[in-house]
Length: 78
Figure (cartoon, rainbow, N blue to C red):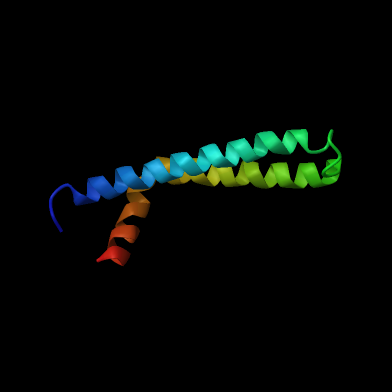
């Protein structure tokens, strides 16, 4: 593997995770509008909102531990 390739993949990986986190947070914001508009009930909101907190938490953990994930990605690319 060429020098710097691993760092390139890690930066790209983190960028994708940041994008994913932003999308999840945007969805979570829209969820807050759903019950008042009667698209979903309060129970559905609570369940969905909790899922998004978990998803965002997983994405943040993956970002903070990207070095642990990138060797796995590079192995599958080779």
